[in-house]
Each structure stands twice: as structure tokens, then as C-alpha cells.
Length: 318
Image 1: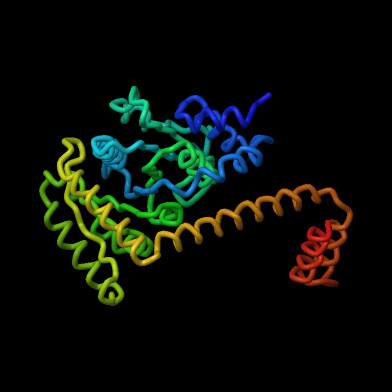
Image 2 (image 1 turned 60 degrees about the vertical axis):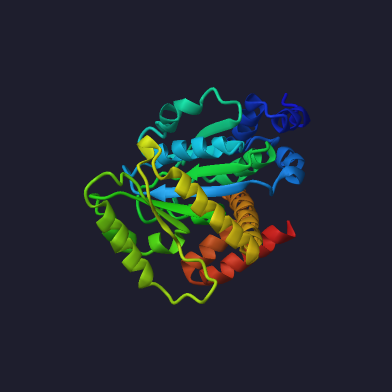
């Protein structure tokens, strides 16, 4: 038996084992999940969430580790949620960020959790929003979310973060990649990592040019800055933190931080409700009513929209 109240109390006290067990409840959709989320709710809404995304090889994990170091120098308690892709064959994931972030493994003020996507598209695990709530309630002042970064579809992090950082690197075709739909639009801060390589200045100039081609901005609108870093040596990382703090101040000043968090909560509620409906529909697979509706549609006696309306009406009555 799991004592949820004790777990929450221990997580609030900074016990990493309790935090880990709560996130495991989330990942496994355990029966105690609803109780845990209800107990954690009063302690959420305080953490600043930063999402990091970019193509493979740009140095997301190294940059995340460098940002952890920078925030720790500021005395912040940091949580890291690193999402790795699941194999479509074995269903497993490497969870390599645990290896890359060994420098922080013994720091009690840093909690690092690797999660597998488990087939969920968008660059994040389906359970990421609830895991973020656990880290928030556990007292993490800054939460860094690193996506799998496989391509242009991995933009879901923008919906889960207060600020989204897009990483690029010279010599990897990222200038062209950034021009594709979904990348320029989600970035609040752009980082050209591995800036000690040839072509870093050209990549920054090209990115700046493409940002200038975007929609017209009014006075006071946020213009994403471009910061050059060498994350492996910690160079430029303090400038990234400065850019993040400026964006956070802008969000608060313009009321956008609260608006983003409301949108995030609405999407989370919708996702949970849809999952519940899918589960209930799944329970009806052997139900005679669904079979009758399917037969009527197959015979042309009823259109699929009308059948769906009947099915939903039956679900809501139930």
C-alpha cells in the first residue's frame, strides 16, 4: 500500500525518493494518482519552467547541465525532466541524460528525472504535465524540460513551458531547419551552441535575418534574443540565464505568464478528459449498442457523425 499523504509530505521536505515515487505513480497511472494530484495541487504554480528543444547533436543535454550549474550558483533549487524517445521495436529508452548530468548527481538541490516518450509524439511524454506538477510542488524553483528533439514535430514543449529555448549549432543545416514551420514560432530565446566552430556567426546572422522576416512586432513586444554559447565549457551560459530572466520579467509585466499557465491548465484538463472518454469507449468495444451503431453505419442506415453523437450522448448519460 502507498501512503500518498506521507509521500507528499516527504516530497515537500525535499526527499528525492518520495519525489521519484510520485513521478512513478504518474508514469504508471496508478490508482493513487488522483489522490496524489489533489494533495499536490495547493503547492503548485510557483516554479519557472524552461523548455529546451533542438535537433539531435546540438548539445541539449550539455546545455541543460550547464544551465543547472548556472542556476545553482544563484542558489536556486532545480528540477530536470529529460525526455528520451522510446524504441518502436523494444519499447525501451536509453535515458542517456542520467549519464551526461553526473556532475549534479550528488547535489541534493537538483532532481533529475529521465522519462521515455512511450510512443507519444510531440517531443514529450504524455505524463510530462503531471510530472512537472510533482517537481513544482516539491519546491523546485526552476524546472528544465529537455525534449527528444527529433524534428519539426517536437514543438509540444512550447505548450508546457513558460519560456522555450531553441538550440542550434553551426554546420548542421540548422539555419534551414529553423526556417521550417514550428521552430521559429515557438522560440522565446535562441541559442547557437558550439559557437567555437566555424560558421557560428553566420548561423546567428541567418537566424536573426529570418526572425526579422517574421510577423511585424509592435513596440513592447518580445523579440527573441540570440545567444552564442559553448556549453561544454560553460561559455555564454550566464548570458542565457540573463535572457531567460528578462523574458520571465516581460511575461509577468504583460500578464502573459498567467495567460500561458491558464492555457496549459486548459490543455491538461482537456487531455485528461479525452483520455477518460477513450477509456470508456474502449470499455464499450464489446457493448451491443456500439455494435448496433457500427452495423447501421456499415449498411448506410446511419452516418458516422450521427452514430458518434449517439455514442457520446450515451457516454455522458452514463
